[in-house]
Length: 333
Ligand SMILES: NC(=O)c1ccc[n+]([C@@H]2O[C@H](COP(=O)([O-])OP(=O)(O)OC[C@H]3O[C@@H](n4cnc5c(N)ncnc54)[C@H](OP(=O)(O)O)[C@@H]3O)[C@@H](O)[C@H]2O)c1
Image (tube, rainbow, N blue to C red):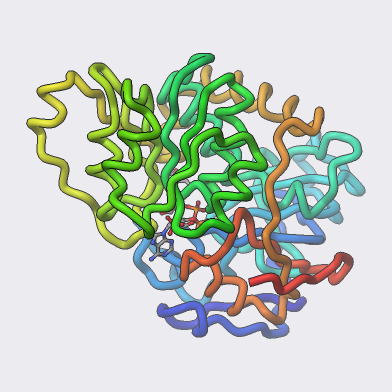
């Protein structure tokens, strides 16, 4: 099969597309003919060996995909050959075939496009669990979304709006902010063109209820300062490359709650909330109320360019790899 392969750690250009043997199928597993996969920021970190968990080389990167089930292990009863599914894993998605545990795939709701499904599993689920259960967003809440033009950010703009929140989108370009506005963001702040703290004060004079931060770096502290007394700050990731240090007196003075979200460990500890949120989210996908914004689509052979666009923070929304070569490949970045 054709696959993107990482044989040594480094920048995205260490990844090459090769013909390799398809992975063998073990007990409890299913084989999926991958139609499309999506690139996520953690894929870049895993290839660089800068993620919390290492993938031993050589490996096929990629953590989310959609396609058709082509084989199931004898002990798998709830997935059938021919099912259209979306799935997530740690690695293995940037290939013509992916083998994962049967529990790691879900059938597509009818009518959902395979490229859309491929781009749904990481960003929308992260955003929904964060908003619904960690930040506990309520209708009318003012939510400040950092990285609002990125994968997690745009998903969160869309989902917070659907939960009835008023979203302030923060991003580095007018183009990203215009897309965020299209998904419901009410206030738009370009952190490159002015002082973020002042801009958030102007947008939200009474202060924000919630900040969601997948970026970190220099943006975290001014965003935290925009919270009113009792506000909630959720730290989700550090796409800027810098883990911020927050002066604790800011937390003390305003009674702010800072809480972290990490998908795998959160799921382990919050299985009831996880199951409820997943059902709600699949309903939103089926109804067309939660749809990832696909900013660019690349052929599998262009996996390096696709990963670079995510690594550089240039991507708007999701970046999809058209693995089966079935779709419209648009190099918009
Ligand atoms: N905790 C979890 O379970 C979980 C789950 C999924 C993702 N994450 C993390 O969340 C973060 C965002 O993921 P994502 O998929 O939304 O990423 P993304 O689509 O690449 O968006 C990241 C955003 O970060 C900003 N950014 C600032 N400096 C950057 C840099 N040097 N390189 C890249 N981006 C930069 C950009 O926004 P500006 O317009 O402001 O520059 C960009 O839009 C990542 O750190 C990822 O690892 C965590």
